[in-house]
Image 1 (tube, rainbow, N blue to C red):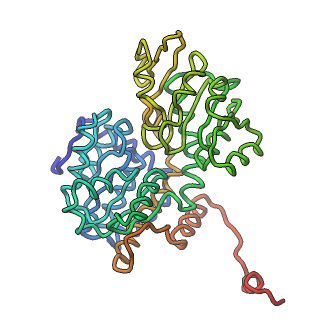
Image 2: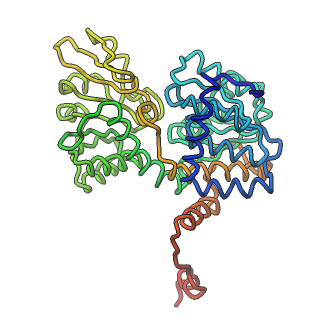
Image 3: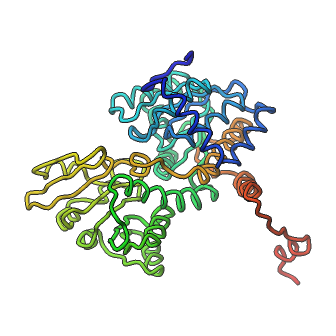
Length: 418
């Protein structure tokens, strides 16, 4: 173990390597990029600092970056999402600096981010913008060496857009989250499946016949609603966007305010990226025994402070399942401390959807390095040729063929005088 690291146990590496290779079987797009990069080495000598969920899928992205010639340092973007065996294998088998321990406290989390910053990264790969924020606030002396970055998730993009609007962003960042081959699949199908997977693993409760309240009806929320309905659940949606609320209504879901929905919720999931989505009015109306959890990036969506202050008893039923007893005797069960339930209580999104998301990450990093001098300090969408290319490669790996337009059809679609 020659690389600097802070992980739980290097002896877990054998198990981690087997799981990384298992995930790789379902990530053929990323594998094709890795094969090309092994020959071309487009990121030779580039230092990449990544703050991401340390999972088997992320491991295969890190392997690809190394195959392209990059020097990589990785820390966790969530204290509960790290797979310790994966971290061990990345260090031992793939030569990557890893600073991540499952369940690490806030002080350790921040120290790990600082360790990645200390490697003087040239490209930032973030999931939630914690690394970007640290660079712009605590470690400004390192900013001049950064040529740009990529951001994986909605929450991080919102933060970066706000930075750009305020003129605070000091390097260009590619918005991976809004690539079509990311949000249409990773957010919609990945979140839908992995969230329910986390709930079931944590509680072993039968879902069919129960009512689920979903706060947020974007790509994540709509995908979750679709999967919950498929599991036989009655779906209630809470939204602040009138168009999204109308869409949910037209899909046949009940739409109501959070305080009203609380009376029906057997299970409540937040997927908004905002704070205090489940707050006092909802807690005060919530059914006894309701289970609440979050699949948004940060642990701000459920007002855990209110629960801790108002509970007369707090009991950990089992790991990551905590029961809060209120003064009137009602109990509320919180999963994963209000953090990402799909990663804390399960294994996150399936590899096949992360294949496309991380293919965008890899190709955007390559594009960024090649075109850095042409880019301004703002948030960019992933170039269409990258997004479309990922989709076409995914189809090829699935054995799916599609038609192409003829020259006549192209001319017809671009004409008005015919």
